[in-house]
Length: 379
Image 1 (cartoon, rainbow, N blue to C red):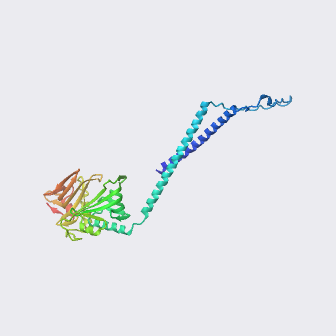
Image 2: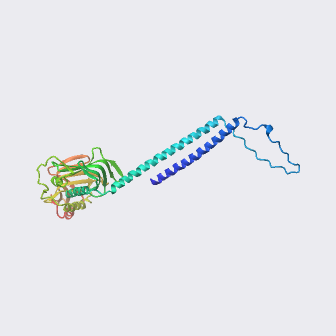
Image 3: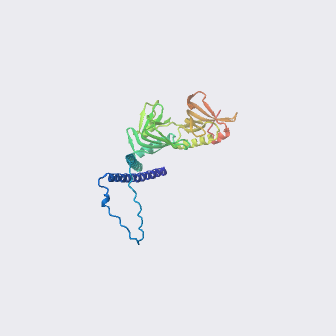
């Protein structure tokens, strides 16, 4: 881009130099023609023949004098030619003025961009207020405690009644490959107590994935987290969170179920799931993105995502219970999902009754048992 900008500037400067030279040349030519025409038309401009000095005859014995070079006669410029030359001069002058105005406009635009870049650099270089920094730390702690490791807030400028202002955030998938960079003028945090759903919504900004920048929708871009511990989040973020509705069975603040596991243990089991499901050979490739607790070989409040060969998300599931099921009789292994919702190909279906099995074609019962440290159920 810099090379093209320099070439454009050099071309413009060359054009200005050419137009300036052409303007001067045409002005000089028209001026000479106009002076010659006025000289011919002025009375008494030519001397009478009788006042001319008589010719001097050279002596007979003298060498012949050098013949002077003929003096070119004044160009007789016709009115049409004169008008044409004047028109060309006026046109060249107008072009020069237009190019000069364009360069002035480009200079002003470049100066404005430089000022904007300097202002943005000054804004980014300012340290976050301590209150905002503590707010982001608390928000990170809440998300990590619930098993959500993707979002990472880089900075914000203010905490206001409407939420965070001038927010920058990275959102990575479970594999950490596809990362979205979100810049927003405002972010709100809303908790639905009845459904235990935390929603972060970003307004007035852009979302960048790879080289593609997309403007955020007018009604905001949503980042939702299901099955969260509402009372704990309310206690940690009272100044940021807007809570709605009522809990179905209001628990005591910060109370957790006995089946819940800590974030480190949860992360270790998700890594074991990743190792087990990486080479199943099924399409889409499923990954366990989070779960909340463990009980009798089952993983509770689990979420899964399915990706295609290009690592694009094409399916998802949320279930109350998830297990790795082995069948010694048929030597097969499956993922068993119960009580939830499955989304695939734009269709959402409920998981009820006996549940839903996802066959893992290349995984044997022994491989599954070893990978999950015996944390499997038998069919």
